[in-house]
Length: 88
Image 1 (cartoon, one colour):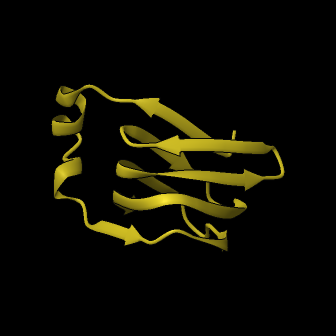
Image 2: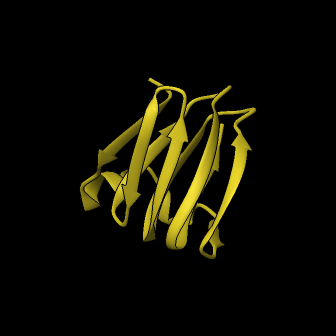
């Protein structure tokens, strides 16, 4: 699976140190993206549909998402996004 969406408990968020990760924001827009490394992120605000060759993924506030290295996709941001993120 190239996109994995989970719900984390507050305890898991604290244990993983997610609140210390950088924050990325983006307005309503649509753009192509390629992941040359894996990304993990926690959506604090917003709503996005990520279109991939495997299907479309709806991502919303509270979702913890892992995007696999090598993923090619199109981001369709429906509501402005604010997220913690980490590349690895």
